[in-house]
Length: 484
Ligand SMILES: Cc1cc2nc3c(=O)[nH]c(=O)nc-3n(C[C@H](O)[C@H](O)[C@H](O)COP(=O)(O)OP(=O)(O)OC[C@H]3O[C@@H](n4cnc5c(N)ncnc54)[C@H](O)[C@@H]3O)c2cc1C
Image (cartoon, rainbow, N blue to C red):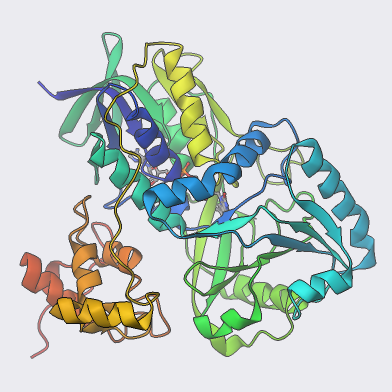
């Protein structure tokens, strides 16, 4: 007989992990099923990392309401989870005088939706905040912030696990069968049972719903590509800067976003594609991103580009549709005990915890939820060597030989930090998991120096042969064998 849970969450993105954590506040058994070998490998690991204020979505929409709620509580959640967060504010810059009415519309929309700290700024005020930005004025949003979306998602999953949730990776749900009032979920030969299923499968939400007999959804992938600048460009910008959004382009426009790690992102583009897995970047879009970025910040230098990536929006409206696709979070209309989330595109990261609360409210309509007395929202996080003051660094190094060795030079990551990342509670043992947890391989050389050292550590600490090491996922091998 397969193991049985009260609730199974399908999808280990920010939304699924927030739901799993929120469900752990109540007395029930929870399992989270993720098809990849780590959480945050879908859209949640491939976005701008902006904690949006909520003025971009139509007032009264679910997206707008949950975004405002998510933004207001984001700093507190990040404090609980030990995740970096910075309240940067944000500028929507008017590049031409004709953009002024659009800024006023955004201001009115935001105020109607209850977004705090919105002001129209003159070119002079804008320059005082961001001297390098070209603009004829801007909309200032004081409550916008930034986070590291991967660490945020990982932290939600780890905290859910610490509070009793089972997190099962490499479990690609391929069959959902009704069994009594509940379900049996299968991934190949493996199976488990659940009374309720929460479908938080992002780009695959329509497919997971269909597996459970609900064919009422359709997802259209829309790719957004980014360029990443190294930290030496950080002095050019401290605030996310957006252009005025153009209707019908499928996103908020190519913006410049500082990251909590000190890089600058340029992007994303918006292009409907067929594939739900094609996160490749393209030369043509890279060129366009660069040209648009230069319009906003002419001092940018192309030599600062260190890498590129892309994320896919899970839209519920097809290309060319002018109507807005709101978040969907609802009981299935055809399959009992199934809750579907679909169309969770931006600002889904910001709204992840409010979405999780909404799922708990939906679940409570079907079964009693009794609060658990011993739920602990806090998560401990290892000390960050790079950002610690010199005297603290000296103390760390004196107390621990592993804190004396710098494994990643670009990001100043110590052997101790790598060991902590290797020892992660979810048991992720691929280089991608270590990279995102420790920042090794994310600097200017992109792993040229430290990747081999990480491979040696994986061999020495866990006995994993280099030829068996993966960058991420089942098929992403890095080494084929010894050269000599
Ligand atoms: C270019 C871009 C920029 C964005 N910028 C921002 C931003 O700055 N701020 C913001 O708030 N939001 C932003 N967003 C939106 C935000 O990233 C998403 O709303 C959010 O990450 C959605 O999370 P999710 O958990 O629903 O989806 P995902 O992160 O995609 O998670 C779904 C998970 O389900 C798993 N899965 C799928 N099928 C199965 C299956 N059969 N079995 C098991 N697991 C399965 C997938 O592997 C995946 O891990 C952006 C999005 C994009 C694309």
